[in-house]
Image (cartoon, rainbow, N blue to C red; front, side, top):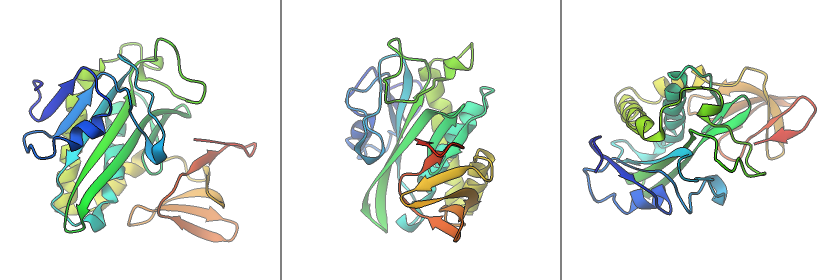
Amino acid sequence: MSEVPGLLWLDGCGSTNDEAWSRTGDAAIRAVAADHQTTGRGRRGRSWHSPPGAGLYLSWIVRPRFDQTRGAALPLLAAAAAAELVADLGLAPVLKWPNDLLLDGRKLAGILCEARGTPASWLAVVGIGLNVRRPVQGWPRDVPGIALDERRARCPPARALAAPLLTRLVRWLEVVEIDGFGPVLDAWRRFAPPAGTRMRQGGVEGTFAGLAPDGALLLDTPTGQATIHAGEVDLVDAAGGGGR
């Protein structure tokens, strides 16, 4: 066990999410983090590039005291917590709905939320992959990544970032349990893309118009305002292309 109560640090593992799920029966463990993953995963079955010494790979075990109907708060609060951490380092992250962090238009962090159980009795594991240092071999061709040390000369090591990130996550969970979803949405909006940013989800394309009260994405389209509750959202550049 690390020096941080509730945080288990591993030198390496297959997937921190899998390691976290295997430890949900131990109430003393709040999160599992590792220096690298061999089978790290992102959303929609994608792999997450997790080489040694390059990032913080942390999976938070969430034992909510609210119904799963409010579970949409988790990816948004995790994104807000990670964005606050990065902002405290003097950088200006932008959130891409629902839970990616971008820096200079490139992916700095991603979040994967997994839930199990029934609506009234459930657990979740929230995996966060934060790029801290540029990989020695560079980024894979299909990974438009960026790391903290590419924009900040003196960057803390990944292990030093784990405790403050976990602290923020736990604090935001307590806020949701006491005050509901509203404060999380306000925190997410602090790091939202500029109004009018072009986005596409499936066959729907429009400009960013904010978040609905339930955390859904709002897009202004030529035929009216669209509400996006789930799915992959791409940013669309001025030339009509797109990127994740």
